Image (tube, rainbow, N blue to C red; front, side, top):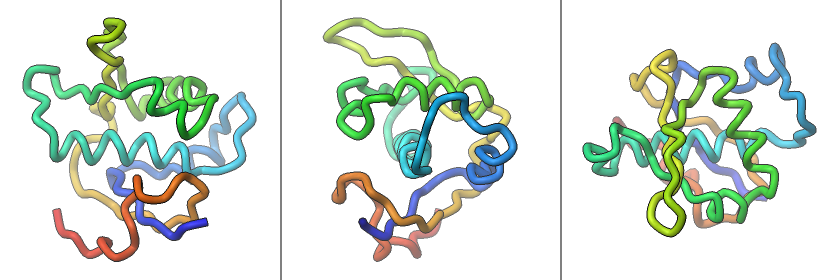
Length: 133
């Protein structure tokens, strides 16, 4: 288990959302929700998304390497208006795109400290927590 900081928009209170509107599927840890949001947040900030209407393409294979039930997590975040999708997939060429919902905004970034059971090396380690955006 690793201590990490997830980089997510400060407008999202994932703990409160999961408590107030729990998913209909069985989930055990919050880290995969954070992983999805972190991935979208970081790539939105650092990648050139001009030709993709600000959508971050995320490979199903990549997500499945962390959690075989990844689709349920994505669907939940979409249903709760946390993320939106372009529903655009071209086999072998383009993965489905996701971005934060306009309801969440792209303002200040919050670094959430969390114990994480996901594979290390793909997450933001504690040492980088003082990065300013």
